[in-house]
Structure formats: C-alpha cells, structure tokens
Image 1 (cartoon, rainbow, N blue to C red):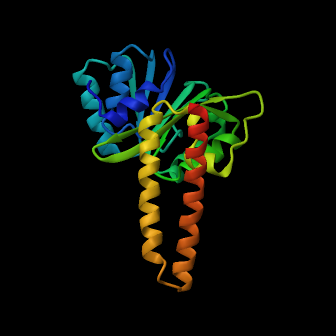
Image 2 (image 1 turned 90 degrees about the horizontal axis):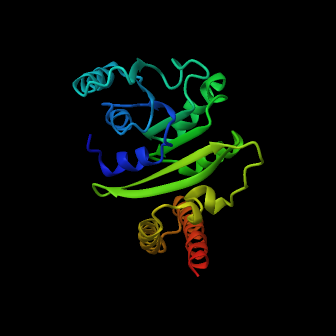
Image 3 (image 1 turned 45 degrees about the horizontal axis):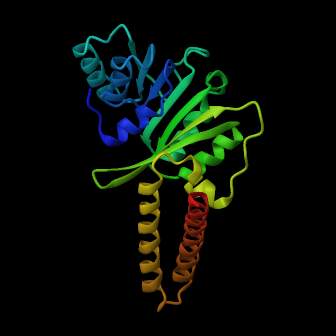
Length: 236
C-alpha cells in the first residue's frame, strides 16, 4: 500500500506493536499499511459513514487482511470495547471534532496509552485538550501534501504533570518536538509573510471590524515570531 505524504506521516507516528483504532478510516489505506508492514497486530478500521467503510472493507478483502483488520461502523470510539485498543488514530478531520471524539467515551479513553492526531484545523484546541486529559505530546510532524500543509502529533498518557505550554506553543507547538523542523519553519515564515501583507492592506481602514481583524492578526504574528525565536535559540 503506497500512501500519500500526509497518510505516511500519520502512519509513521503509530508505535510498533500497538493495537490501533483508526477513527475515520475512510478507504482504509492507513489501516491496510499498518497491517501489511506488520507494525500493528490488531487494527480496527472505523468510520461513521457506511459508504467509505464498504470501500475500506473491499480494499481489505482484496489485500487478504480480513484476519488482521476489523471494520466497524462507529461514531468515534462508540463501538470500541474498553481495553480493546491501546492506540487511537484520528486524522483528516477538524480539531473541534477530534476534541469531541476524545471526550465522548471516557470509559474507552482511560485504557488508551497513545494518541496519533492529525487535525485539519484548531491545532491549539487539540493541544490544550491533550494537556487537560494528561497526555504528553512527545512528537510532532509536518508535511506539505499536494500544496496543503498538514500537522500531526503523537501524545502518550503521562502519570506525571504534563508540561504547561505557552500560548504560542499551544498554537504552533514546540519546535524541539518537530520531526521536520526545516519544512515547518519555512511554513511559519510563509504564514508570517501572508499576515504582514494582510495587515498592510488593512492599515488604511479604521472600522471596528478592521481594527478587530488587525488585532487578531497581530496576535497570530506575535505567536509565530515567538516560535521562530525559540527555533533559532534551539539551533545554536
């Protein structure tokens, strides 16, 4: 199974030997890859929609992996038995939905030791929730796939207090954990240029909405600059 750059990034963050629930498996490509590579002895491919799940089942049968991958129609973790998996993979959906999924079935999550999450938006919200749930982020990765930026995190359950992040780190992560720092730094520099360009266009306008938008952008710019400064300090 040849994966897209984004899917490969997510699969690489899954720990060897883990029992995985692949939430929102879509056509099952990552589940198939994890089984084919013998990285995971048990994979449960799950989706809330019947259509994609049927396609995933067909792909799994074609690869002769029915004995290693179980398919379930499920809204998030709903159809997981507590203790059945130790790793949850959620990718390709918004951060708000990831947060809802993680909080909806606490009896399942309490037995999960490892999370691999790839939010399409609201990464800061996901990082904050992980801290509240006592999961420590130990790796982050970033890639550009077909012109779009993607960020993924791996977090493990911690018996100790999870380190507190700064506002900038909640929004953009700790550069020290970044698996692909040069590409991520280039992305942040690009975002900075875009923001400066928008602020320049807003400067002639003095409406309340323009002022609010300018303040939001300046806050974002401050966060990016703080992360870039930290990056420079870590590289010395």
